[in-house]
Picture 1: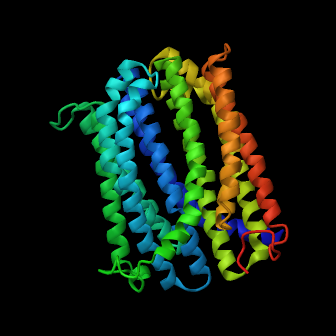
Picture 2: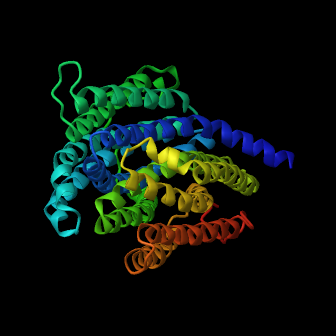
Picture 3: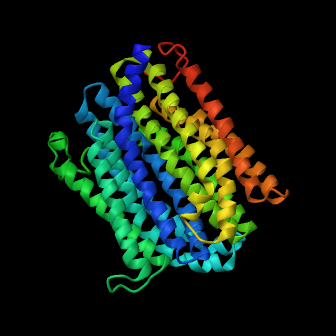
Length: 453
């Protein structure tokens, strides 16, 4: 028991600044939703749809860049930080290439938005926001993730956390100026929120780069002017071996929520706005298990590098227990304070009432959501990504989306039915990923798992 508590404390120490940083990023989204909601239901629905599409592609990028944390932490555990710095250079190049490709794809998709059955007024309102948010802010967002993950893998998570909190403050002030037309600025409405997001992401990227460039902890391994030196196709392929399945896994999960948003739009603009409110609240509390997932991935990767294979289960299941406790507490808040939370976003009584009902469903699937993300992070630390990708495909695209479609559009449940389908998919994913981790760590020194010899 003492060993388990020791590992749990170490995981929590790494996860805490990551969680705070992730919460700050969610506060940026929630701030956008609250401020946009004050100018109307249609702009709020438009921001929900545009942000859903952006999140889908951003999550793909996060998956592709996940090897930076996994491989750098493994080198750190083996005592080779210089070798770990190689993954920083490769990660920066991969982030640039991936973001440019994703921008081109997303711009191409704009021609199809009119065919997705969304309310015409929502499509008309979202285009300026979508173009600003997508075409310009994806590059700094992706590059920031590379620098942040590398710093966290080397045990330096606190400054990235502070930078992300600063980005939230910048975004909030610029929202107030640009959305509503304060300090002499024209009132840009929804488009102003997009420009505020762009500016804050550029600011956070510049801040983390300057910190890492000057910090003594990185001075010995900083590439300097040699960012393109020593690049090898073999290393890119090694990153993609982990990153592509991880990206596919996140694509299945994020795609499920984007599909849910599309189905909400088929129901009504009010349903889409309520979906955005409930999803913002659920995503906020999700940041704690997500931070634990990122921390457990790096700690398991480091433990493998150190050869401490017997500690893998203690690290994984300790994080799972902490995530479940947090999700139980958030479920109670959603169940008891749903109407109050929804009213903080918008004044429309119909939207508030529906969002409160969706938060009750969110209270139920919170536990499963926390368990599945910690399970996937633990498996990613073992470089086991192909089977988890298959599990998420089955859970979301063979169960959650078809179930949500049937319950939401062919029964009287409506928007509630869509969320019940999502909850069922999360439950299956949580159980399956947990069992997968148990199987691979049952005999970590055997040949049954993806552990190095």
